[in-house]
Length: 622
Ligand SMILES: *[C@@H]1O[C@H](CO)[C@@H](O)[C@H](O)[C@H]1NC(C)=O
Ligand SMILES: *[C@@H]1O[C@H](CO)[C@@H](O)[C@H](O)[C@H]1NC(C)=O
Ligand SMILES: *[C@@H]1O[C@H](CO)[C@@H](O)[C@H](O)[C@H]1NC(C)=O
Ligand SMILES: *[C@@H]1O[C@H](CO)[C@@H](O)[C@H](O)[C@H]1NC(C)=O
Ligand SMILES: *[C@@H]1O[C@H](CO)[C@@H](O)[C@H](O)[C@H]1NC(C)=O
Image (cartoon, rainbow, N blue to C red; front, side, top):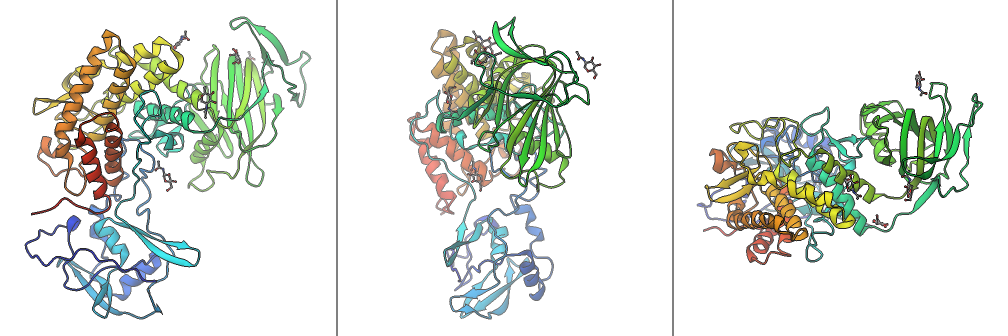
């Protein structure tokens, strides 16, 4: 089937034609061929048409996805689906060459001379010219795929590739955070693993060795918090607990020991009855094992643990065709290692009680990513727990397998923010960062307004749920860098010396990144709505000043066909930095959300206009 579409045709020779907004003004015709698909097909076309050079090479510079891997400013909003890999997410492979309504048909070849710059092989028939969609995709950055409905195939054309989340209702500063229930931060490629000792993600963004990146950590917490409010109640299987004492059956394969390796004892610090295990922890130690009914729905493991010496807790997981994988949680400070199907997570060497929550599927995937050369094989089919083995000496309690444990992940994050805040109220980011040549590098130790704001959004929710004032105090301290200028290790700047702005990247000169600024405002808003005490008055002022700037400066981010990521063109006099579609959509999602509690109509009207840009609409021209 052939799909035709007409782009607007203009005969006005005075129209400025730039690749992005070019109107095709060939007199009659136009557009579309559909769909060719495989690389083979494409190569065939290129070869059989008499094209001067590989025709699409030069387009790379205008392809938003090309070169994204090394793009330093491409990943900060920590959004899902900001994929580094998929060069053309919606161009599908394996589609037949050329078809028309009447079935297969031979069309005449014709060269298309593109802006007098190069040639593309096209087809023509009856005054209609058909241009390869792969070309249009690259040239106009539009997306398309063939979709099959029963017997019918059609082609779906899209101007953008990302998704607008329309708010369900007024934003609740203690409820779901924005649209974050849709995110799965743990499985993102930029997450090296979830740290065994702290239960927070370790980021490989800007440092392949991994670092603790406050923005990613906060987003992990906020998405779990939001899922807790939107998903169904988890199912929990208790394997053993000292107090409850279900009929747990532990086995020991080779029992070289005379004393029983497992006791139920009253533990001094908690005054709770817990299990004490004591095996020699050596290489030949087979340990104490408890089996579980194999079940792929209960893949979150939680337990309370106090380690004495040489502790390893090992989980045997079956996947696919009964392949055996082992996850070992070991009393060591190293992070993660793997050897074939055996994966080792360090859980630290603390001798205090710890609450440990592990998403076994994420752990398995992160471990396998270390040993597999490709993505293939990193996601075993329907993994399920067969048994759990304890070795070494320690106390354990409340061993459960659950379908989810969102609040446990959330509190791991909230407690991380409490433990790691520095005396200036910040969470320093320990990698060096260059936003753009001409802007000074951010030296390790910089703060981000977005990191501060999202941490505040975590902490105010933790306070609201627990009533524990420590979380609120930590959030209040986190406001300090908002009052300090970028030059002095803060996150604040002012546009034209007048409009205050909180910087995701406190660069010199200022960069004015829009999405990070709005996230930071959300944090201030959450705190202002949580703390009515007079000590929190300044938060209200910081928020209100920021909102004034946002409303005033928002039009500067509007290109008439998209939005700008930042204002580097103002600061440095360079070319403007267009927001790719996923950032553009983030802007829209943020504005729609703000407009549920901020009455100024500019937020909604800009968001609506920007939604139009995603369908190819543009501001009127003269
Ligand atoms: C990411 O993409 C997948 C597959 O295209 C989709 O199912 C999912 O909803 C997307 N996630 C977000 C947050 O947009
Ligand atoms: C959310 O958290 C509450 C309190 O911890 C818990 O009772 C509930 O089951 C959780 N629900 C989900 C879906 O995680
Ligand atoms: C821990 O393991 C080491 C080496 O296997 C052994 O020398 C040591 O005695 C063990 N410690 C305890 C308390 O079992
Ligand atoms: C096990 O869970 C119970 C119930 O939540 C709790 O009271 C107890 O303190 C937990 N055990 C430990 C060692 O934390
Ligand atoms: C409040 O939270 C902090 C940080 O996690 C924790 O250290 C403290 O024990 C908690 N206080 C209470 C009373 O639960």
